[in-house]
Length: 188
Image (cartoon, rainbow, N blue to C red; front, side):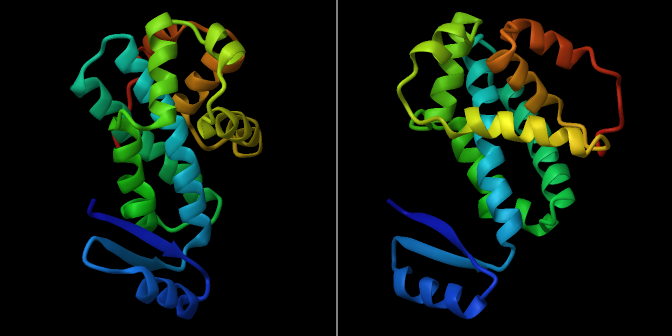
């Protein structure tokens, strides 16, 4: 299968070696020196994938998922920039690239976890019985708790996922809450 990845390192010479050693006609490696942005991007996309799976499980369609992924990217960028990441990173493979695949692939563990939660319209049984690694579950909790130190950062999708996973909120109620938030300019 054809794929591309990003070798992130503060030391571009080391990332260049990785790029040169692993790139071939079906596997292309790019390099990036924004370790912070890349790390937050690949972590946060799992939380957004939980939300994407949940809306799919609830029966919403492609337009709903596109809106969620787009607004999820905005949350990733706001948080990542506050933590020291670079905007360009979120427009690349470890940002929007990872986000698209994780929020749309049936092979994504986080999407599938969200789908199961959405189908049940409740996370209780999933959280009790799950045996799979779903990185977004723990990431959601860590980011939610960290947001207390960044009151200027709005992350309503991450907050909604947290409420579903850890406070027993119903996904259908959280969707309504998100849709009824104060109306804003898109870039805010």
